[in-house]
Amino acid sequence: MEPVSRLSHDPLPKVITTNTLPSGTLLSKHLHSTLLELARVSALLLVISIEVLSFLREWNPIFHLFSLSCFFLFFIVKPLLSKPHIYIVDFSCFKPPNFCRVPTSSFLEHSSMIEPFDRKSIDFMAKLLKSSGLGEQTHLSPALYYIPPIAHLQEFIKEVHMVLFPVMEDLLSKTKLSPRDIDILIINCSSLCSSPSLSSIIINKYSMRDDIKSFNLSGMGCSAGILSTHLAQNLLKVHKNSYAIVLSTEITSAGWYAGNDRSKLLVNCIFRMGGAAILLTNKEEMRKTSKYRLLQTVRIQRAFDDRAYLATVREEDSNGALGVSVSHDLVQVVAETVRSNITILGSCILPFLEKFKCGVSMFRKRYISKSAQVYVPDFKKVIQHFVLPASGGLGLERGKGLKLGKRDTEASLMTLRRFGNQSSSSSWYVLAYLEAKERMKKGDKVWQLGIGSGPKCISFVWECNRPIVGESIKGPWADCIDEYPVLFEDENS
Image (cartoon, rainbow, N blue to C red):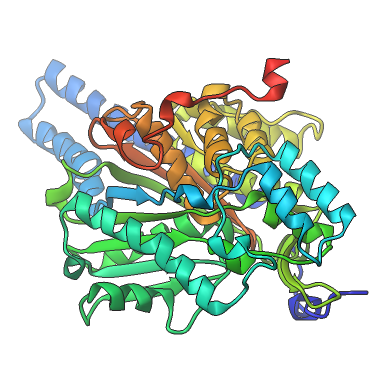
């Protein structure tokens, strides 16, 4: 029997249906970027040539003035005036209390006592947990420890308070700011959309200003934390001299599925408690003290494609139990979405030679030999650190596709092992891991990749503004960073 709520997710009739992003569009973007880069290099060579000729032939000084003016306008003034700089001043991650810890054995024993789950579902969840990459230190909401779990709005709001209040207070304490200094507030949570909104809860709790610009995002999936940062970036382009706070979380008690539909049981097994608070600004006086400066943003979505649109859907099963269905197409859909995002990002940040090699291979595959392999550019030529989704197998596949080593994917896999998949906030735990290991050096580039339902993919490239030290004694990794990385069973064998 088809779930009742599936009807509400059926794609609407379209005048034109496109199943895939045209490869010609990506190719044209890639070639366009390469040509622009070539034009910039040519312009620079032309200026140098004019300077050399004017010096050797003793031309009129007006030639010196002309060439230097061109260089000054196109290579110095234009980049400075193109857009305001966006900085991450600091961020905080929620560390769940020990009484919320849920070892695998306790999770399975507890689930077996809950009436809706049959033996097959328990065995299926046991298999999922064994291959998930989660360790024994992950956490779930206290509401889920009851038999049966408490699925009331009041308990959902308690979890909101439990997660968001501590990270908000920690961030304000670290940055020495008052709640009334904040100009923009953005909160994202996919599974809970309350009234009053989560942003109103925070404004009320901290007596924030009456003119604060607040936003509440829901249903945006695992990429919502980075998408919220993207929204903050766009708002900071408009509102000068401002502070913006992004609060990112997922309420596990609201996302719990109590049923036997296997496509919905994955969420119970891998998603765990977590939350993060991020302070961003466009104030130039914060440049030296901020942790990171934003260099590049690329955002892609594929909701126009019916197969991608239905890859992850929150719906009721045949018995009316609400949960998130994960289809068998998810892996391929994610691969296609990430590929589109990476192609555009690469055309923006990669060196000319890498873009040229990739462009030539794409042209060859499209017009000469369909069996030819597309060249995979080396992103490590410009990126020193990779913040990949803490999603186990999918994260590993993305790493392999980009030819990344174990050290490059280590932060993502260790975050999954220690904290589980915290949905939209997991990206900030991955970044916190890199900081706790003291790998961040001034000038290092960090690629932050987010993938969420819809499906959506967003990439941020940040530049480290200053050496980041001392994070190993505070934050979510404070009492355990020396225990990682750990080897998995397949690496030990």
